[in-house]
Image (cartoon, rainbow, N blue to C red; front, top):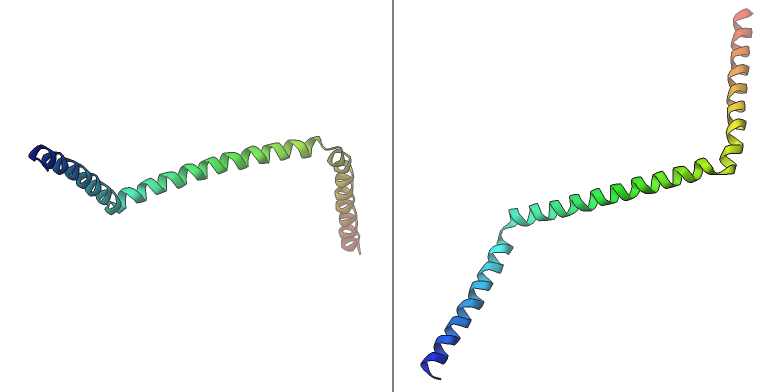
Length: 97
């Protein structure tokens, strides 16, 4: 090997060594890795929250438009009113006697 070739080999080795040191320093920086992971998880959670909200809105709209729900609503309201009325009558009757 000639002197210039040896010098080039030394430069390549220094570059690889510098890259290796940078990689090791990045791996050793636990605080930065934790922050990055936390930011990633936060973004993922926000995305999921938006996705679930959109899904809930979509399902809610489908339920509201559902003919089954529209037909059952008056029945449920009438049943609830009947229960309240019967309960009131029974309570009134008990107080009277």
